[in-house]
Amino acid sequence: MNHYLSLFLTSERIKVSEVFNGLIYGIRKIPLMGKYLGDKYYFYDFKQIMHTFIPIFSIIWQIIKSFLSFIFVIAVSGVWVKLIGDIGSDLGISILSSFPKSGKELLFTCLPFVVYIAFNLLGNNILDNGYKFNDLSKNFNYYPKDLAMIFTFFEPFLCFIGRSLAFCIVSLLLAGINPVYTFLYSLGLYFFIINMTAFWTRINGDRKEEFIKNPFVKIILVLFFVFLISFLTLLIRVDIKVLSFGFLLLNLFGIYFSISFLKNFRAYDNMIEKAVNSYSEQMRKAENTNKNLVELKDKDIRVNKKINVEGFEYLNRLFFLRHRRILYKPTLIMTGIFILVGFGCFWILSRLKVSSDEVYKILIYAIPIISYILFKQDKILIAFYKNCDSSLLYYGFYREDKKLLKMFWLRFRAIFKIMLIPIIAMTLIYMFFFLKFIDGDIVNFILPIVYIILNGIFFTVLPLFQYYLFQPFDKEGNQKSILVVLMNLGIYYMFIFAFPSLMVYLGEIKFMLAMSVFIFLFALLASFLIYKFSPKTFKIKN
Image 1 (cartoon, helix red, strand yellow):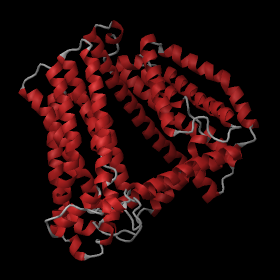
Image 2 (cartoon, one colour; image 1 turned 90 degrees about the vertical axis):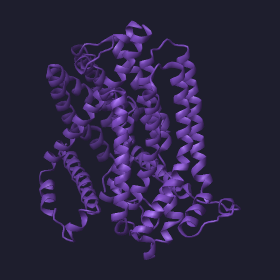
Image 3 (cartoon, helix red, strand yellow; image 1 turned 180 degrees about the horizontal axis):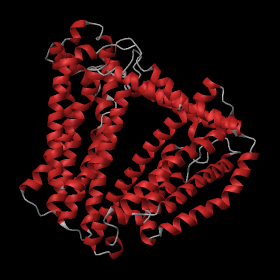
Image 4 (cartoon, helix red, strand yellow; image 1 turned 30 degrees about the horizontal axis):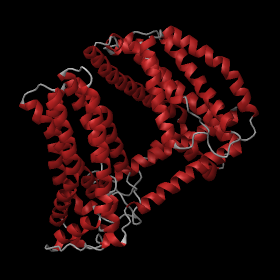
């Protein structure tokens, strides 16, 4: 056991060091801050302290993650339950309308707790950690059984420590739930994760490929289980005492067989190899996809249309003419799917008795989510770099402030023309819903349209802002900027989760006004920062 514990602590040192080095690298790349650090490495002593007290830092980091994830689960569960409850009240469905309306009531239904069960139903800590196994086995000579024991027992135990504190403290403060019950449930969840690992290891042990290989199928199944189990939990109203003791006893019964199976299992090398190969295959597919993502064909390069402009305008016009297939086709496909789904929802709602306020609330709630799906441009930056700027950045004139600002606005207008396709589609669908279901004044009608347009502007400015200020690509066109990755992750959570939740908290009108002001100020600030700093930041990176 001491052998596995020592290896686990070493893996934690590696993980913490990678995160720490990534943060320092990101700080050094911030235009306003990085240059003041110079060439000296100021953080060596602090890093040595972290290595010495790695168990403490690992536990602290896990506690922070556990608290944030549990609060996030409570918030998302609350928004979802509130929407269902409001719709149930309007439709006169007593079961739905009796759903909890406060965070305290929500915790007493046990919904935030059972979500963790749903997310771990398909979990296998051996097969699901191929990317970690790949690094530890190749670079640090970890043996297959060592990896299996670490990620089956020690990694979940670290999560158990942080999760138990989060469950106990948050539940006690919000709902006054006895910490004993939440601790017992967290312990049952720890055993459940081990049981699921043993179960799926048994299922996949003799197979050449995973039982559920496609990651998208796995995501869909997980989401299905989340909604199914959470809905059943709300209907049954399980008591926290029954859940904690029952769940713990059930998994205690299975843990003996799981540990016995995992202890005597002899094919860990095959399982680890399977996990690493699966990860490597996904990386190869992703690499090939990125290479072919913006590759131009001969028919793309041949432009028959006459271009009657010169200089940067000619360069920009030629670029977008050659990239019509790459940039317009995905936008048209996604917009077409959205229109079909929109009219399907319109048909369903037209056959239900729903109030004007509820339809309006649902529409405003959905706008940021739909905007992210339709407006987010994933190909445009790599196309700019690989097929245009990578050869021009060597010339000083191309990086002058006024010329960069001119290219920024030329590209802004060209990208916004692409954005007009989903903007018009969203506006038309919204107008159909408003005219059919909503009794509102001109302000209620116009403000969402303005908000949709401003969302389009935001997702037009955002990639250009990232491109000119952080230039995320190296010479080969591989994305290397940690800041851009973190920024994209933050944007995802904001538009998919935070903004819809904020709308519920502020109300529709206040939310749209606040978001409109935010997007307008962001566009102005981005223009100023690009003019001021992009001559220094927009360059070829090693």
